[in-house]
Length: 211
Image (cartoon, rainbow, N blue to C red; front, side, top):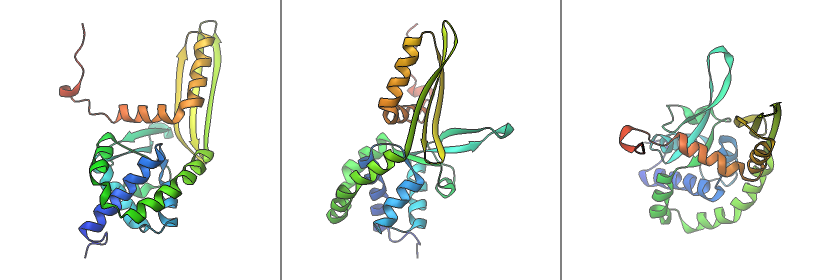
């Protein structure tokens, strides 16, 4: 017997995860997603992690993972294909629904029982507010010379980083603009970056050089 349940149950559980990610419409940590699902008794932890793994492998969901590089430097990396065990590493992974996931959900959403959808529709807004409150958004700039400003933008969720960006701009006005945009639109910018990094950039999909 499949520990994940019947084929119908597996499909339904994956669609529930995708539905939650679509409704949240922002990067969601493994911890936050797990809390929503377990508190609503939608599936157990093991099933959730296995379904997340398979959704990432199928490119329905993208996952941003913490990876340790040489020199013990910890940086955030994106793994759209999610190597085996990605979901099990847990708390510092964060998930977003891909375009392919949105299209699939659009066609199959009715396979989620209407009662579950109604429960999610009433629960997600409060859950989203709680997640947003837990996010720490910071932006600052450091003048290095008259025409060189280092801008540092960060997004954290409780005790782990989601992303840290450093950019050098030429004017104080640009530095202030970057900081303001990050504070107002950090979730959208983060999603755009993850989407760009997980995009298939094989030769057949690259835009032609205009030169």
